[in-house]
Length: 223
Length: 305
Image (cartoon, rainbow over all chains, first blue to last red; front, side):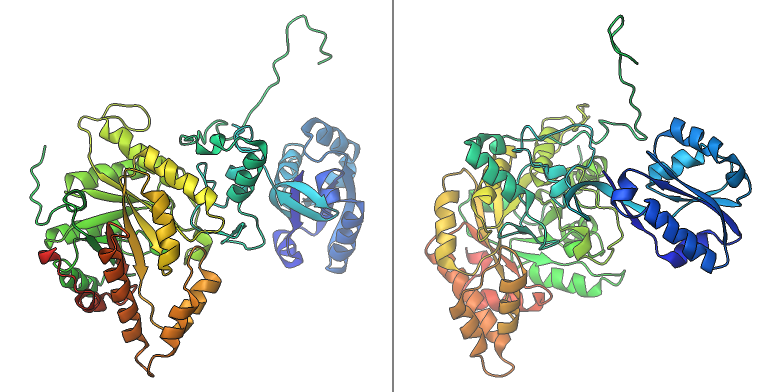
């Protein structure tokens, strides 16, 4: 899931300078779980903005904030409230904010900072384990990603900053290469670690990424 | 091809002749005032076989390593160019290597580089397009006449390729695998991270001697018992044994630095006498002025080796 953190309220007010009427948009997926754009947070935001002299013309929590077609459809259902607003405040991730961008001509502003693609460790705790590099190496590394979990993204083993299984940059973080070593040893596959890994193709997905699922012709796909 | 005059023998020539290799280190300054650095270069150029030049050490922006290497060359010393992968991608690194080669740089120490957050530009984008093992491999590819994109070079380069290893890393096994990978990727000699415990170092050398590479023991000058304790607590892969900390602590007031010099000189003698390694790399970190004194106490005069 996409992990987000709400910007400081003062920053949000600064973004909204000159916009006295605001429409709020939340997201029912990631931002709800991150408590940055669920029904409750949208309500709290409406109260806070009202207290600060803004008029909230309305709000919606989209089912999926980054679904562009649905966003357009749902915006049409709130046409009046959106039309009467000076700006929209988007309480989801950067992708959601830009889905809103394409669903209205009104100014849109982000309420959140978008942090990373995160695994849910427990309620309200997230960790990044995948960097979306476009060329998965997990088959070679015991299912532990060095591109993401090694601070330097090293592909050929630990650096000198490895510290009793922790990373020198953040002692809270495990050294990915210690984990990889331990896992490959358990599997009896240490030879995988000994193999040279050439420089990575950092353009496996050329920015900005685009992907279309190829459908088999004459297949029974319901697309 | 340009004809380049070399004032000094290369690191490769020293090691191949069986001589005990003694290198020092130059840390470029922050700013354009380089008089003091030039003073250090002049002080060391005839006292050590070669000088490492750190590359934005500890991720702190400084005068460039490549420019300093050329300066050392111009002043009649022998540089060992440190190249890290933190600040340059593969295009920039290869271009720098072409430049270095045409200016007579013959030795390159290949490092991944410290991480950005430990330095003084914490908002900078870390590059790490490649890392140390890949850098060694990249140089070998360039020596074969191609760049890493697979394109032909109009003339290949040739370097003596160095790497580093941390004999005190915990756990050690993954570190040793990386050592092996560096050898396979083309490393011809190694400088170690600071070592202080000679028994541990001997154990590491038993492993390292199985490979066709030369090893220099890395020695960092202790300036006080506090520094030793600090490194034990905060610098991964560095271990100062208790007896050395006590030796430092028992120094007369204001004389701790003399004890540090004595310890390092003793260790250099020991390494040389017992053939524990093929040389030493002296890191006096900011106290380069003291290197001649250390060498004198260690009874090392490179003109007589």
